[in-house]
Image (cartoon, rainbow, N blue to C red):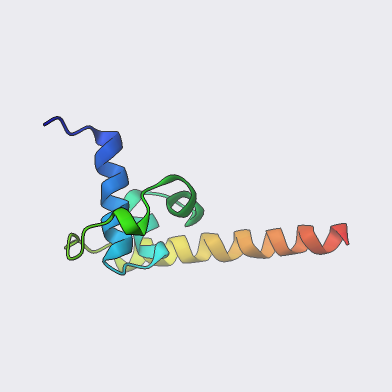
Length: 84
């Protein structure tokens, strides 16, 4: 059986979602600044294997993702309000 990085990343995210990791933790583990990447482009929770994750992101990486996403949400909300 061949395992490719593309498939492994998708399965990793699916396992992380199934394992109950937050999107901020998943983003930090994957090296993403945005939580949207994991929700829009990576594995679905239903494809994950229970108890398949035994890793942890550093608190600093998780906080960095949270801060970046708060800024993005604020910017998005401001754009939506300006269009009304």
